[in-house]
Image 1 (cartoon, rainbow, N blue to C red):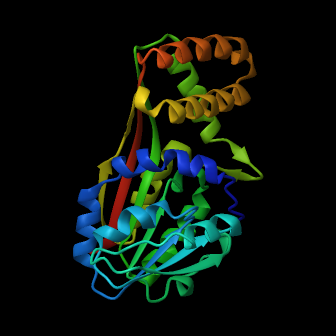
Image 2 (cartoon, rainbow, N blue to C red):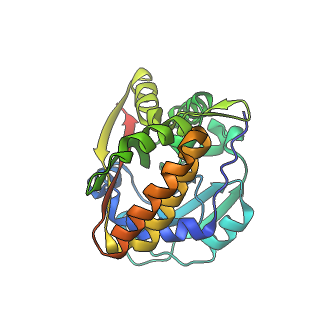
Length: 270
């Protein structure tokens, strides 16, 4: 198993505001009620630290965050930005440059809470199984945020919407380097695994709701989505170019709304 998820700091920065307003505060508050100070929070696939910046102010202090990612540059960027906890005290940040395939229960020893954001849907089943095993063995509650579910609504609707979404979802489930990715099925797999371990699970709908105010994000999201769809079904290339031009014109005229569905998971030992 090898978990390397290529992602740029620019993309993570671009999506951070939309992520922050979409994540479930209700699940975060419930998680906060389960933990006691001082806190040790392990953030898996932490990237530039957006989950820490959003969640730390909602949790009691003092807090130590352990950020796990294979990308050293992203971790350095995350650790360089001061973050205050719910009492206004700066968090302590440690980093662990390591692929998630090396995650063990011992890695999470002493954890008060384990988090992820926008990670599960880019993993294979055995990788999620390894993460769930480590979390269950550690015994700390988990808050896994913003996993895509495959649902998208665009307003106004277009005949290409369902075609390109189906191709994109197939691409999310592709086999890459011997890994069969779960894509939109990841939330269901993770929740089933936690429940099979005897844990309680709560799931919240956490959609991105985007419009002209999010123009740059929508442009990048649309570009990536269509690129993936054409990679999966090359015959769509010409239609994708026409579709992209039509959607770009609507967005420029403040006439395009986009809803991208995600779910957050809170799981804890029953």
